[in-house]
Length: 290
Ligand SMILES: [Zn+2]
Image (cartoon, rainbow, N blue to C red):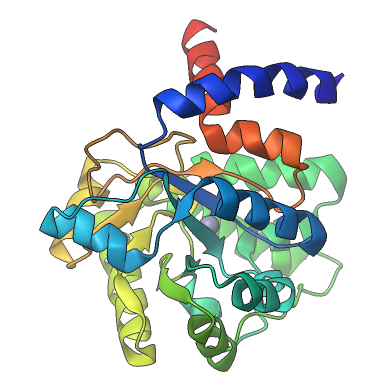
């Protein structure tokens, strides 16, 4: 059923892709769990788009340089270890540029992502839905809740292998730029101003020390508001990426760059529809009407 739906959507995505072919598409991945599907996706992208790097995007945003036709930028959020384990050889083999946005307090540690900690201590669907629910709580509430959950749980706290600075350097050598995804991944629209200042100061200083792009930022979960945007500007952030499942308008706002969510294990039929932006067109229009 799902596949038949994507057959139909693929017919329309070709028309949609043509109309919006020169609008910048930015893809947002998280993990590379299926390297063979991911390789098919990369081949498709290389054949059908001009994959740009951060330099080209900067030139366009700040020096008015023209983007190539069919421009597409690949990004990854969070710094999951699978990106290194399953991606490194492919980035080198296909010589594709990308940006990885890392959570700086996790580099060189065995601290898990906080949402995985919740799923570890609360089993099944309940844990899954709780990890989403807390994104709507104030940042302080979320932190207190997780601390209490770990303290009162009969299970030992979760550990997870995180990227080391030398692995980040390896990825960087393979053509991946390393950017800022905050220090601890809070929802910026749920933070006090002081918390945002602290997140930015800490992550900027860490990435500066490592020699990476501290001023290129992806909002955790894509959550932002006017006051967090102002704090980004005050901290010297030049570019910020959202998570709004849209292709970009012809004039791109450097602090509100749209991204389309994709997954490495999506089959090619579905992937083509998502990359075209047609999927998000349906998604946003359906949401407006519901
Ligand atoms: Zn994230």
